[in-house]
Image (cartoon, rainbow, N blue to C red):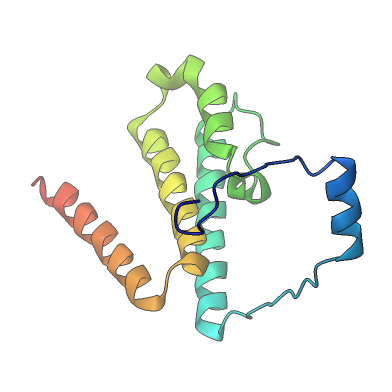
Length: 143
């Protein structure tokens, strides 16, 4: 307000009659832009989805008591998947093998890779991949 040199500001909700008529008179022009993924990004996306599917199949194979409908690639892409897995696995978390726990953590990492593929530029994405690789190498070597 100070930068605009406005002393009084009136904030009205969009459903107010005056605001509705004003918005109806001047409808916004919406332009939607879509950038296609390059071939390398498409290949990387399909590879990540294949690895996610393999992780989910391994989790299903080692834990027969889990709901098979919950652990699909389609559900694993959603943001609520981590919460669903937590609710499903929490009663038996202490009984899960270390491999199953690692697969659940790997799914979280793969989901972040999938979202960062379209959000980050190529250099930042490569740095993120390198950081994951470094952490994996440190864990493998016991550092």
